Image (cartoon, rainbow, N blue to C red; front, side, top):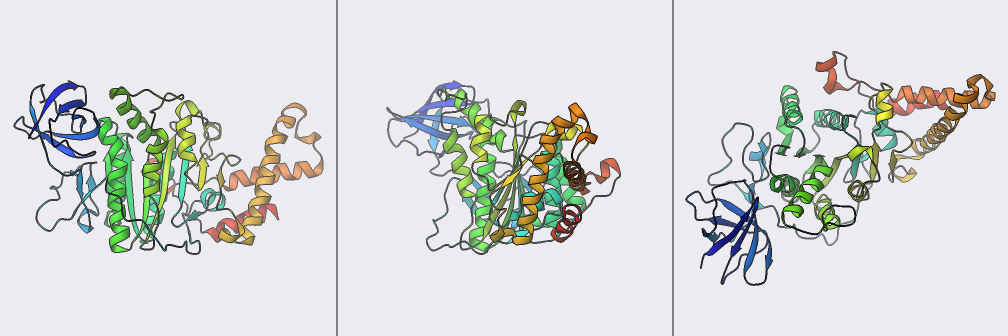
Length: 434
């Protein structure tokens, strides 16, 4: 028995089913001659299904019939998607033909992979990014998560693009990029950069940028993750997963909560904010088949790092790189706040004794530099003790040492980019502190 639409409010459509109610996350089709798809968000007593208009199709009216499809959102998966840009629903965004036909594998994006039973974490494997400040303060370890935190315009996307450029060049593994609610221009620039450098052959891209409705922006990260899971589980690949921007994912979920008339939590965000973050982050994991190593940018609204959404996402990361507007204003690139940047992976077991001891010395010098800045502003640098003057000078050299030109910015500023091996980075620091 088909159901009937009883109300239409913005992207929310309520449908009445007298029997055979649909399942959660099932697609149902409207009998309007266009087969408009609605996604079942939740069910209420009396056979009422609250649905989301995934494509913002306005050709829906009260009284129209709806029919079950008995399936969820299914996207194409496999080698045929490499080098393509797809939407959250698996539609092409690159002007090329749709991925369809016999033999094309598809996957329900909400279907979770089987849980690992005997999986043990292998010895940490460090991947080189070629970016000094990252390789030193937040070692990029296979299968772990790195968060890049910062306000608008401090360089989160540039740093992410540089990592994609540097790591993809090595040809190791497969890269995924999920564009969540960011600017269309940035997505286009990334696509062009990868194409010019012949890196699309190792990259899958999913986009739902600022122009898309909140349903697609909330789903695109899950779609990209579902595709990455296939390559990890079925082909045993090691995946590099880049998400820009995780805060926009929370924003999209918040917009959906608002139009669904859900009562917000104390921070003003959706009541399900914690589970929303966990659902996505728990799927970006490794198992006995392969690994997913993720880099996620996190926008900080009004430069407030204490924002509840930022805190929730931050707790899921192994390493946090904090980009600061104050640092950016000094002309330092990347604009990393070296004192706030942290990593739980900066241990002798992961990076080795040499790297670890150097990091302790560097952090000590940088903290002393911060405390001395206030004193120098009052009495001047010449009034410091010889030991303090020496440490202050070392800290200034360290800050300069971590400044670096980006390869992806060469076409904009004409300055060639730099790439440093981890050994180069450690040697340059030893020359300063030892």
